[in-house]
Length: 619
Image (cartoon, rainbow, N blue to C red; front, side, top):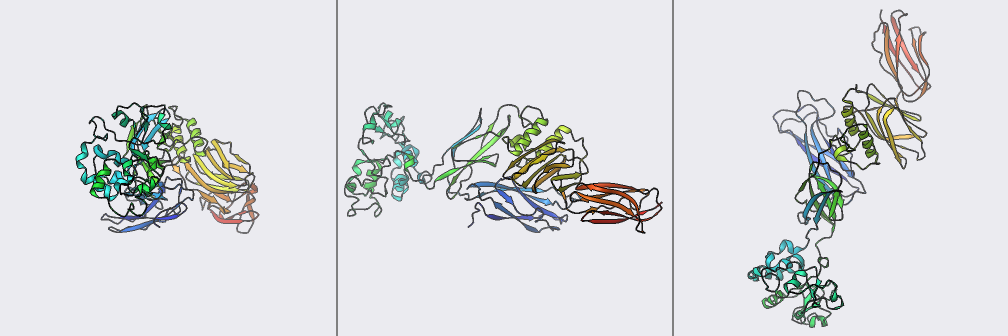
């Protein structure tokens, strides 16, 4: 239906063009990312990769995305599309830098030019955070459509939807331009302008006045004790209460004046409880909607407009459901009140805020940004505990933020600015502390053994973050040989973070488990990880050799393994292992110093697998 609703999938099509004069042959591609917690990207990372994009041609990249079924209506989602050299090939010949395109869309309701935006946005730093406040949008038709001066009928513009009917709009625009000097107090002095009339007060004379200004203009004091409460007629002299019960006050002379002030309130009043508006609503004289007012009727009625007690009594075009709040262009919160306290900010930094209104069937565009410069000296990214030092205490706090036991601080903790807090941000803090004095791993491989998970690498692993599913009563023991190893378990799902592990064994567990998600990183960033699921001998090196060669054996799980070397007659000349081995990678060195040159066979046997290879000894 043209609207991306919660629980629905959507296709995003991005046109990628080569507008240059040269072909781009190094497997260009486009990828997409989002920082929204409600949206999943279902497309494969390399789904939009091509062999080449020739000069003057373009391709449409298609991305499949899905909104969670619990996405709040009106959620705004930002996407970033990266376009250029793809991840499946190294960039050669000085490839151009990748380009990025960021755009936003809504889930549930679309943006509309007709939706009124919030008003009077203010932003102030307080002791509790940055206070963002605004007024409700003015959703009354008259505000946008009535052309007359605020000095004359400003209060009518603000509160009377009926004034925008054809008759009253024409009256205000054409017939009463000379009343621009009217101050709103029945011709009183120019220094007494009463524009707002939706806050009635009691005067000491016992009469109710539309607001304090009207009482003051009549030189009547205000009785805050509320003596008017005993008065059954809460309207000023010459006015009667509207029959609809909404508290409005209507000019008494309108009763029986030949114009129907009926239940439809076509002219702002319902006077049917006064003998059917003096007979005007009996159906025999006139109905509200059948005839336009004569000039004389319009003129007479303009002199005594109804007094609308409260804006809440008026019919807005559409109900306001809430507000979306943006900081520096990114969506940060949805609220139903007209204020928000932003606790995620740095000292000595400037932030700019805007707000949009969410309605039942549409969403307004954002207000103009209002900026605030916070006081103090800004903390450095990585100093998540704000003690003006970057050390292991910041790593501990950031891990707690990742696991949900600390309030997230994206300003200080999201060091790679990807919109999320994860182990990759921890790695960047580790780099700040260790100053890159380690030899990074280039390869890493998981071994899922019975009752344990192992990670074998050829260098430094800075951090691992993974989620596993398991029996709800499972007992998990994390490795003790790591800088930090913590986990949080809920409903059979464990979220695990291990920083700088010193052993291959990451954890042991007393139940079956499945790996849901995993991130492994060295000090340079995220690594590609392999999963061992086969029994395999690596190629011996060197081969041919003299006098020794090296090879490794990969086991998918723990097993009894025999590793032996045979000559071409089938005789065992050397046994390298005949014992139980844990799942993972095991390295062997065979020294054939006492054997003669020739062809030999290395064989590995377990209960379920066999693997072998030929090697040549040359002396």
